Image (tube, rainbow, N blue to C red):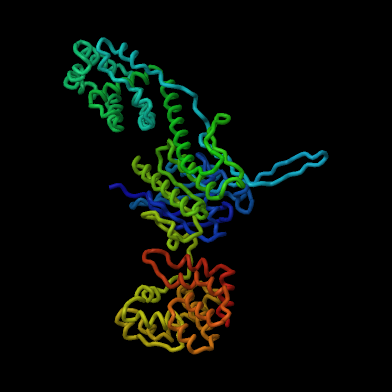
Length: 585
C-alpha cells in the first residue's frame, strides 16, 4: 500500500517578516488544511515564500525581502515524510528542488493601488484609486491549428474495405482524449517502425481481402484481426484510452481501428497533430474559465476572459464598482480553474492567503465546493494536492467552515498550555454528580464555597479541586503568572479566573437581596450581567466583549490544539489591558 506523503514541516528564512522560522505541520494530502494565526503573525510572509517560487529558484521581489535587505538570502524548505523516512526539498535564490516534485500555486488578494496623472496646463495632478490586478489565465495562446483529419480520405487510403472505419471526429473533440493523448507522443512515434508497419500491412491485406457490409466485416475482424492489432503496443495503448473514456461504447475491434486512425493521423504530420492538440486544449481551458466565471459573476460588468496581446486574461472593474465578496470569489474561482487546467502531472501545493476570511456565507460555501471538487479531480488522476488555507479565524468556532474532513493547524504555537487536570474537569463538568456544584461554585462566582472532594475522587478528577476555594486559589495563581509575563500559565485557568472575578465585582455592586439571589441563580455570565443591568448597575460594555475570551476557555474539544487560539487572544496587548482593567475592581 502506498504511503501518504505528508508535509512534515515548512522552513522559511528572510522572506518579508519571517527571519528564520520552522512550522511543524504534518499536512495530510487531499484534505483541506486550515492554518490559523493571528493578524500580524506572518501569514502573508508564509504565502509570499511560496508565491516567489519559479521553476529554477526562489525569486523574492524587493518588496518581499526581509527588512528590505538584498544581502539577506531567502530560503524555503519543505520536509516530506512518507512513513519510512524524511526528504528535504530546498529553494533559494540560486536553485529550486521543490518544483521537481510539486506544482505550487498561491491565491491571494489582487488589489493594487493605481495612480492616474492628468496634465492641467502647467500643473500635473494625480488621483489615486484601488484597482484589481488583471489575471493572466494563459500566458501564451497557441497557434490556431486544426486536425487534418478526413474520414473519407482515411477510408480511401485504407483500401477496398475502408468502410469498416468509423469517423473519429468525436475523439478529436473530446477534452479527455486530447488531454491524455498528449502524454503518449513517445509511444505514437513508434508507429512508423519497420516491424510495426509490416504488421499493419499484413492486417490491412487480410481485411481488404474479405467481402461484405461494414457490419459483416467488423464481425469477421473481431474474430480474425483483433489479436493482431492488440499486439501492436502503440495501437493497443491508444485503444485502451478510447475504451476508458467510453467513446460511443465502442467494442474492441472498433476501438483498435479507431486507434489505428489516430496513429496514422499523428504520423502523417506530427507537428500539425501536436499543435492541434495544444490549440484544442486551450479552447477547452478557455471554455472552463468562462463557465466558472459566469457561475460566480453577479455584477453588471459582464466579466469574461479575453484574448489580448497573445494572452488570455480576465480584467476586473475598478474596486469601487465591485463588492469585496464578488471580487474575492471571482478571483478565487479563476485561480482554482487555473490549477485544474494545469498540465503538470505533479502533486500540487495550493496556498490560499486569507481569501476565506472576508467572504459572505454563500460565497464561502461556493469556494469550499470548488476546493472539494478540485481535490476529487486530483485524486482521480492519482495525484496529491495540499490545500493550505491561511486564516486568522479559528475554524473550530465558525460554522461556515464546513469541509467534511478539514484539518486545523495553529502556526503560532504557544508555551502556555491547558493543564490536564483542568481539561478533565471541563470534560466531566456535565456529570450529574458534580454538574450543579461545579457550574455554580467553580466555573462561576458564588459567595459560598462547596466541597465535592468525594465526587471528584470518584470521577478521577483532582481531589483537592473538589473544594471550590482551593480551585479558585489555583486559578488566581495562574492569573498571577499571566500578569507577570510567565510563559507557563494555564490559559483556561486564566479565563476561568477572569469570568469569576468579573461576576464577583458585579455581584458586589448589587444592593438588593432579591437581585443578588436572581444573579446567583441565573445561568451564563452574559445573562448574569443582564440581571445587573436590569437592577440599575452600570455594567461596562467591556465586560460583555470579554465574553469571547472567558467563554472560549470553558469549552474543550478533543484531538485539537485548544490552547493556541486562546493564548493568541490573551497575548493581544489590547485584550490584556481590558482584562487587567476589568478585574481590578
